[in-house]
Image (cartoon, rainbow, N blue to C red; front, side, top):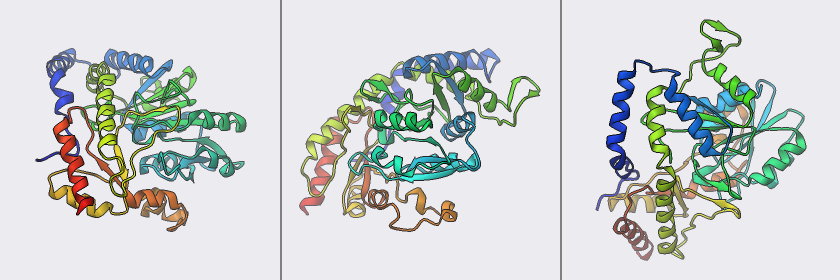
Length: 368
């Protein structure tokens, strides 16, 4: 049996006609940038996400960069960031000239440990950038309390958790301003690169819209040095269609995760995902950990099962950040996760036969 790590078949097939009609309407409209389709999607996504405002941008990295710029975070500033995250989170901070200050995760949930944040705050700290990793919310009540106490911006990275909640409130709606990605593999994926920024602050969102459009509110009049990062009309109209099905698709992901939880419980040294109290995850990824990660991945590959490692090297050990002079052992929890984590297939349409096959092949590995 061949099982890819990711398949879009079940997501695309039910809405293929709707997507085709929207594409034809887009082609015939003659308006491709900053039009009514983008405004419609921005309104729809803000409403879905539980925020007042949304600004569509070119991709998830740009979303974080623009959000940081809107908060006037730049050279000389420090931003608290997880040690365990995709490097884009760090790249956004350094791209505005600020310095990432890493904080270790809780090893059970992989998300930033709020109990360790306050000790990293200095007079230069300007913001906290929590990442809702793998589809699960950070502990936002504690993070917001710390931010309010120290008068810091909170910029959520919600790229992997559209639809997740903490204490019933949507991720991407806690912070002063929040960024997300609609990269095709995300829970709400576009058909190319795309991203968005959400906030309850009209002032911050308006600034984001200026920054994304060459620093201009009025064509050819530029009030600041902005850049070009606009969610185009095509991606906006296609995302509007997929947004209507996001809750259903997330429910299917959760069902797959629950079946893995049942079938893989107490198998070998396998450590299964854990949800924090108050968190309702949407399982962008299903990440397990084992000290025999590489051997297990090889075994599953030989059996036709696709897996990935999210992520094999934490940001502080990447060559790109050699100037920060971090070394092996500086963030041992992030390093342990990087050395032991393995992402199993999880997507809408993964059926019971496939789930059982994956589970049985994992059991076979440990039995051998």
